[in-house]
Image (cartoon, rainbow, N blue to C red; front, side):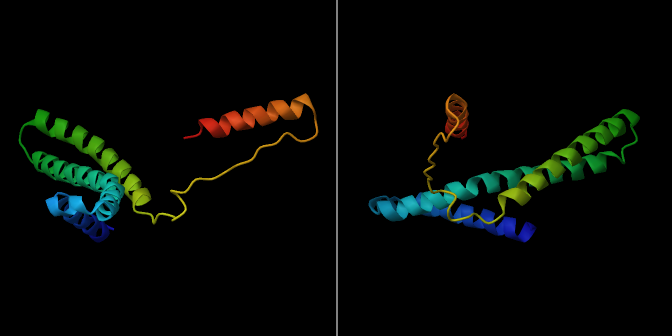
Length: 137
């Protein structure tokens, strides 16, 4: 997983450099394609960087556990526990983020909702169903 995340970060940095090229601004289609790919990778890269930061902080706090001062060791223990929870949360989020995207995810859909037989009850249910779908984001 870490190798894949490092590769995603490398590609993100590469895209960053390509987008900042002034010659690319003349080619709107290519620029749009690269900007879209970069924006898709951005959330993964930010989460991965946060995960690495938490890893470094855990390492630093483990070194503090070897201190002679009891207060510092106690604070380091508490922080390591909180950092481990944060690290686990980030790992779960990264696992979800690196799942392959379905090509149909970005497409729109048309849903037709009709009231069937049942009179007012069916119309009320249909209205609630429409309200639910229209508020879903």
